[in-house]
Image 1 (cartoon, helix red, strand yellow):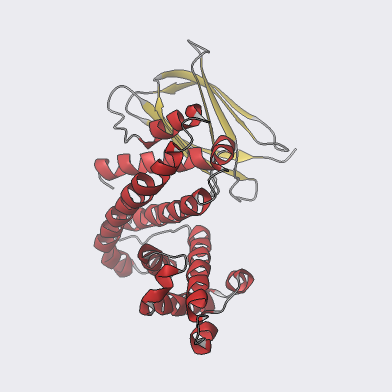
Image 2 (cartoon, one colour):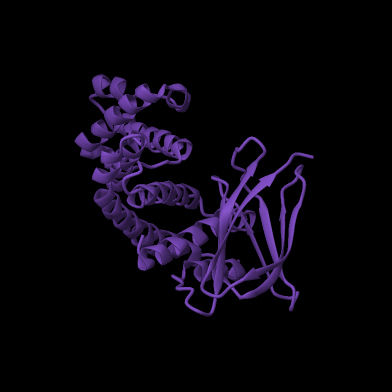
Length: 307
């Protein structure tokens, strides 16, 4: 990604990380529609991350996060199938259409790679060919996101020519997805819903709109990104990362890993910090005297061990 897109994605990631943190989920719990819209943004971010891998893969092929993509395919496919079934159940009932897309979450999860591609493709086509389903809980971008997720899941990473063919398309997809999250989801939906919390939870509202800012680190700030996983390589959600500046202990930053075990924190003041990484039932990881350099991104991969 270019710098502009990278900065936009950083703001998106920071906003999503805040919203899925314990503080975020508690603050937005009264807004029943918030979680579903946030989940859509998370799915789009997964697609962005994997399209970016393709966009920077050059001729050596790519290594995608197939587990995350598979989960995204299942999630969006189930959402689209549910809407199509609701649409087809109107009188007169279209049993043929229902049978084409009638798959439970467990059906999708248990399907083989070959079968999930066939099933998801059939659902995507059914949703695309029946515009009336858009009135039953899905949007046009859900349908295009499902198509994009299927494309990613079927990408042949062992074929350099395939990677080359996908580079330009991947870059275009990234721009489209960034716009959909930034404008359609954040600006037009989540921002408005968060504004309803201004009287009851002004602290969260302030944090939310700080996270929404598109930050160019320049020469005045630094950031930290990375992943958290267990000894078997499985990603861990909800891991706390705590930064405390050595020169001024009052300067602290607290953030959590998301559903994919990823974390991101921007607007960190440059300096030396002690880092503490913890999750209940796991041993605590500490790092001391770690230098955060202005304009740079400190990357970490933390492995947590069960106690």
